[in-house]
Image (cartoon, rainbow, N blue to C red; front, side, top):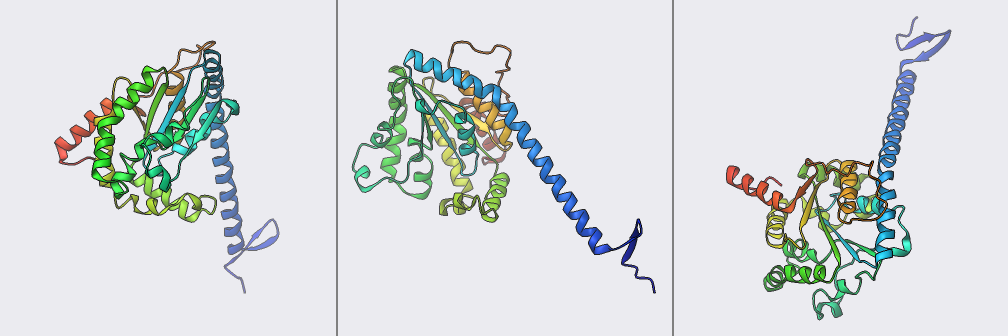
Length: 296
């Protein structure tokens, strides 16, 4: 009797289940190879700009200038991955990444900016803040980790604080990474299921989707009240991580007129990815006028 689940291939009897397993394995391997190839290609595309960052870093050292870069935005918006690409080939003696935890009891009694100022750059150094004093305007405000007076005092005083920093010659770059609600949910789900990423998922992350509208309102107020000529915000649309990373590198490179710049590189910013803080406020105002609420 012929078994309909058995097929003959070059004289070998193979079951359909075996064929299906071979097909699935082959498809999985092909998919993995394609993903690896895309990742290699993406990393190669960043390298010319990463080489320019080394020149910028050398220029800051030669001129004894200081740079601070703030990386702000929602959870899972791509801040950490971008920071890693920015610093990957830099001289580690002349940059620091600062990611502060919640304040200690002693820090709670200090001037609010004190814990940040202690990490400010020396001459010739870049400091990258993975979240900064704007915690008070975002996470602390949304979750009630600060009082209304503390929030109001911060919002009234931060522009003056930053104006003083830039007046003293510090190059201050403020990046806000903007991700959509659906994309944030997808990234959170990946963190839940990937053992290499589970450490990234915090209790705050779990609540981020439920508090989406609160964060959006707080983002709007922050941009509107703290975007200034001396310390403007640059919004990075970060649903596409590769685009966000390469455009962030361009923003940093365009902030300084450094020596030996490679003029053959394209430093033009993609307007679909890089939005000025002022323009983002206009977009959000238009959203609220047309639909009665912000989209994101």
